[in-house]
Amino acid sequence: MNKDDVIRHLTRTMLDKKQAKTTVDKVFEIIKHGLKRDGKVVISNFGSFHLKMARPVVRRNPKTGARVDVPAKPKIRFKPSENILKK
Image (tube, rainbow, N blue to C red; front, side):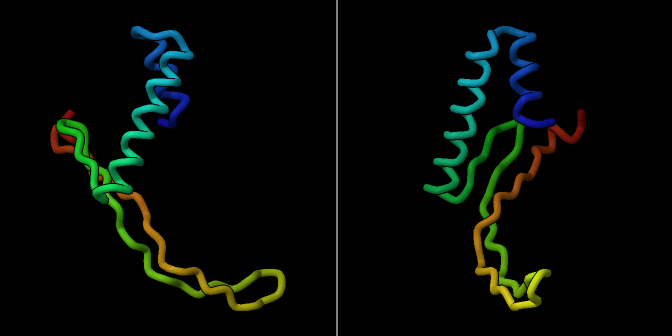
């Protein structure tokens, strides 16, 4: 399921497409802000989002074969709630 699927499901229940898109965008914005501030966002009966640092890696440019150092960077991880997994 992607963002457009969520918007489509919201339009079936209660909102028009513009309201649904605004609502979904606002929810993602709130999650993003929470991750930047605290590094973790927990939504009861849904799951939790947290940041994990990916380690630095060395890659190769396929065209030239030159070494490319990719620095460590934060990755978003999601862990679903036990209630979601039971359904």
